[in-house]
Length: 173
Image 1 (cartoon, rainbow, N blue to C red):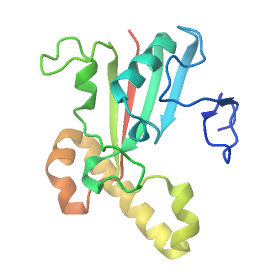
Image 2: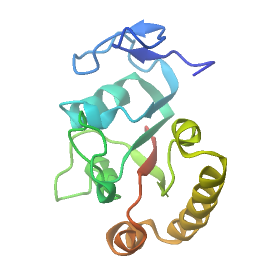
Image 3: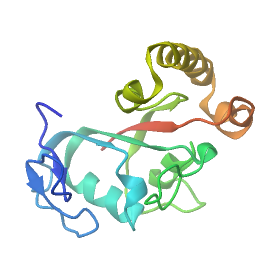
């Protein structure tokens, strides 16, 4: 992504920093980033809670962390995915959550479900008509899901074939 420090361990990908994100600590100073964006990364890693702790370490206070991951309702979609995620994921970063606080304090500002995610990958596969049709349907379903992500994630996601992606925006206190 232009304007960002891009991290990857795959030699086929252009990256500013080569690093295996399963290996911690990451090669960044504590409290050095105003914003971190991780799109379809966490589902490939062995320790999502350790990764979240490491990303929180790198964030400055009040810094933003945006995570995009597959929603569990569409399955894992890729052979290398280790898990899917649900709207309950942010609870594990709230100290008041008695059901399994992870030890990493992050405040979730926003949850967004996407029915038609990663359009840049689909545009070349679907053809113009199917791409426009699916992306239009997706926008409508995404707007409805925004009314109550919890209801959409738990109940009616199965009526629409599931959501491809869930996006969380966190802020470090």
